[in-house]
Image (cartoon, rainbow, N blue to C red; front, side, top):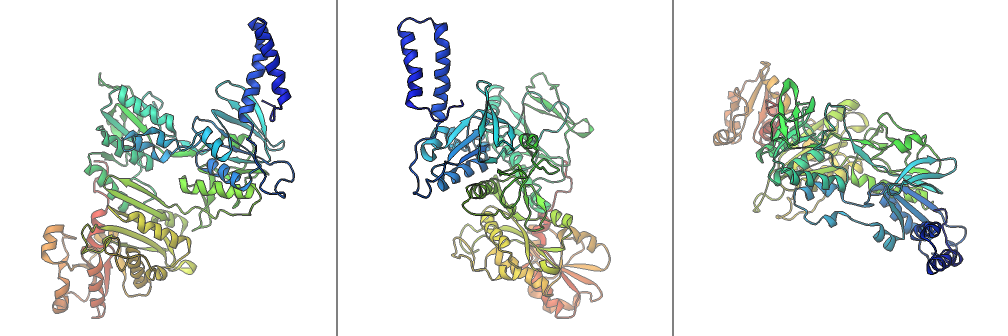
Length: 627
């Protein structure tokens, strides 16, 4: 294992006595040391980098650089691949604790649910393919157990043999990723309580469901993995309950967006419980039970043949801690903008690192595949000395499909802005995703958040969207606008693609910018959905619903005390409205309410418009959040 370049003489020194001894009937016991030596050399031959031609005469000067990457998959594999493209001569060694150096972990729920049928499609690369394509020395089933930053060595353990050895490096990247969070709930380690981190976990879930003939499933946790697993388990016919301890699903979204996803799950037969922390996992009381009884508050028991633990992740940074690297309070690896850790020649990338929040300047941790890949590339450029490239932070752009709907978001939500003390306002709107007259138009619900004071006044701070079509498209554009530090004025003026089958002459993002413009310029004051009932009950406000009467019957009443004056009759009936009150105008989605607000304001009324109108009110959380 310490031989890195075996010569022909070394090979002969093994082959010759081995052939002689075995040919002369040498006892196996006597041949054993020779066989052992042959095995050791064979291992090293398989790990010896292939011959590479130098890129140029200048590039061939000096000894080859030695790069070691601990942890593959997203950040590590991206770094190793970039290093090879930058340095054809380098010796690049990748250690991966599991058997798969590069796999599509985001696709695993869809294999469990049968949408992806070919398991091999999830194994994006193998050690052999990485060697053939990139000449990488990939050593799977090999765990890094120590880093000596002074000696620039990594100690690793071959999990197949238990052997340990040291590997020197010139530059080191740590990309250990994140591991499932397992809180200290009684019985959480019971058989049949399964997490999903790698392909082996995926196989174990499918095997348990098949062999135990599971009929009921409980998914603990309402984040990305939890919701995707709930959807996919329902697809294969299980009776699924999703349990979340927080008041809402999907913490990156605001509650009125998350509630739309909750209803979509429920509409497809998934039972959803929020505000429902798990107290214990116990032996099933039912004789036929094969998993656990999940105990909630009030001794409520939910039998489950299989339990999926989707309770979040934590950085897998035990190695970084023993190496003495600086960690944050959550255990994340502290890095600078070049992805350098606190130790010289040691870099880190992926779900285990702390990065900047570009919107606040504070540090945060975001476990997403896109940022992990870009961090790996940034680290490689700096490790190779190619360019002092910087990683300027993670914006949190993400998406999820839930049955018929897609939800997407970027930037900060209301809770994050309030926690950071940033003054903001928001806009809700519900346009069609493309021209309404073209067949197939669907409602797209969009929300943007923008600053209202100081240097952030008018700046886009975040956006969220949900709908059957177009949510990811809108948020991709919003993510670019956010990273370009654009204002709502610039959103209003964005020139985006238009054709009736794919868009509108004024895109949803244009509309959002225009509404925010009007708010900041004093043309309209808005009321949020969560404040309507309190305002309507205070005696100083009157709700004016400007929909047509048939709409009230079809879509429901906005508020029992609302005055209904259709927009087209408002000028004729304006005298019916009380001047001593502040009027709150509303309609179905907000546009007609805005028109009404402008009419009334110019007739001397104090008026506000209900932001997003009835459609946003209908998206609000269910009145009973645990039923």
